[in-house]
Image (tube, rainbow, N blue to C red):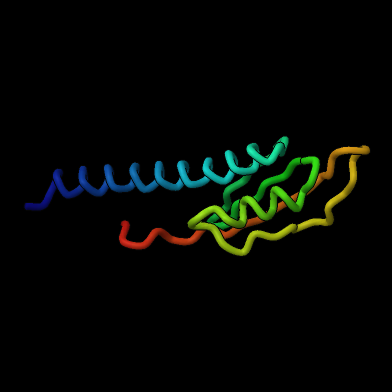
Length: 103
């Protein structure tokens, strides 16, 4: 059967795909927070997630977010800067991988 049910099914699938992306995005944010990061900006553009913020040890945040399943190529995209005696300012980018078996 086609018509309204097909359009409805596609619409529901699109909403659920968007929610999965949002959920995956927040997993990375939660991991950064768990390492003591204070995030000042979070941006998802296409498949690139950018986190800007500060932490006691920026490399701890990088290593933790690099281990989140479904994301690859975590790296500092700007120099890490010491902002006071106990915090480092960082910008990290990661690439979100497409979900297998979905869509």
